[in-house]
Image 1 (tube, rainbow, N blue to C red):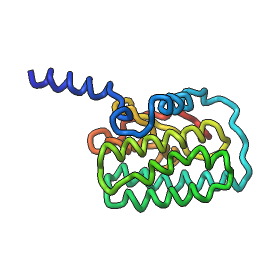
Image 2 (tube, rainbow, N blue to C red):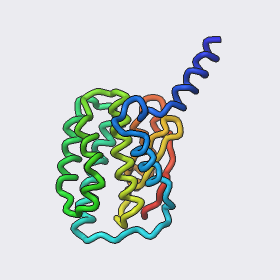
Image 3 (spheres, one colour):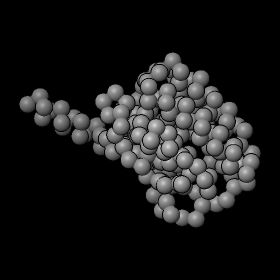
Length: 186
């Protein structure tokens, strides 16, 4: 009986979108993020100047460190790692890309030094914006979009690092390598 109750409770929780409870995003904004992710990965990506490409890659590199903090559940390092990503975003000179990351910067600034569900949701929203950039701009990089079917969240990860092992930043304790690659940028 306890197992049945647990399964039913888990089913209900996993079908309730966390953004509805925890995020300041409204339904319309969430739908826009979903549309960004549903675009065909084989579209022709926009070219960037060499400088803009390097600036975006600096954000992705800083995010790789934040991703590791989430995966390791190093809660005391979340805020400093998020600030490094925010600084990298502030250095983006391309106005279009910079504008696309403004909401995400706010979400990164809301991250706290704890392992809360709210942190996971804010980090997921930031990764959704990065996924939009990866899908729409030719970065010629090793960064790809990953997704965990259990947490229903996405993240960006360096696909060449550690021989392509998946590192799920949302549930590293029980499902550390759960997930699949959604994009192929290289």
